[in-house]
Length: 502
Image (cartoon, rainbow, N blue to C red):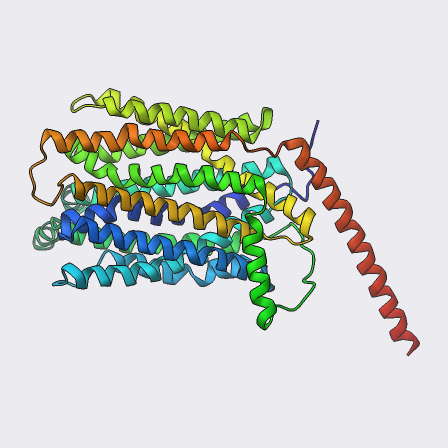
């Protein structure tokens, strides 16, 4: 039976510290993915085509910078390692930019507002990249054991999904229940005067203010999460030293080789294609959720409960899928989970107004399937080992940078498709939702997205990189690094002897 040695074992405390920044990543991603289109199109009054285009531009810019950030972190050498220094550096800027995204200057509308949001999202996504890519790469460096990595990324997945849950619920709570919370604090805790309570209720009754200060609170949490990861983790997996200088033309050549070299790996390329297809569907369902609950299900007051159900089952299922993968394979776990999710997406077409239990059951079912997504993060770490075996370079940053490039671009395309689709079917703020428009909303949210997900499952079926092959590569890498350490020790001994002779 395979065991995990003490050097590869990571404590629950350290896994939790690693997951803390994942919480902030999920918080940011879901608040933007779920509410930004709705906020600017339905609350502010910007055209859905404008805001969806701004989000897609931001996602594409974010995606482009991901591989560059991965390359930079791969070739960074500091006393704090290769990844954590960037997570710390971007912590405060990311928190501030999250707040500014939800606080546009009053009076801006139309094209000027579109330009403002586009520029701000470019800065926000740049800061997001500086945290997200090194954070993913760091997970692969906490342990070289394949099963321990599944556990590490399982923790990160759970924290990220919990962040997404908070990103989905907290803004809705602020909008729907801020007056009740203020009245409770005044009546039961005696914190506020009558005048302050009345003014606060009036202030937060405006959705723009509720969103703005929710974003301020979340910005603080995001910053603290990133700082926690910096302080509570350290890299364990060694990497071979740089063989050449990266200055000038050589640096650009290495950048090109590192990034495009990842696509030459057949397992990684198939994983990317499957993930990209599925994440387009995720972008559609995420950005359509508010519209579905508001205009289709007429259950806007229960949206927090729906999100909680979906994410709670995804977080709990991650534990199941990690254990299931240890007894079968990561590929099998992912395929089965996505197959479950695909069936659930088809079934969402039959959700209906007033059918609360049906909606609840479908969200729980879909969340259980979503939990298997953690397998992709763990598989990328295993593919990095294969790449190191072939190239003598550890390129977690390059691999996770390219991975997030495709993932974020796909999600942005999904959001853009939603905005364009809403425009084409005649949805605008204040327009009556006819049965024809409602049917088309249901069609995109359910069957069409399910077909996209099914295509991703079919692509991943051809993925091949099994546990036995990976364990063989791990043994070869361990022998190689042991020989390298011996050679370094011998060289150091000769240098010391030469110094004594002189």
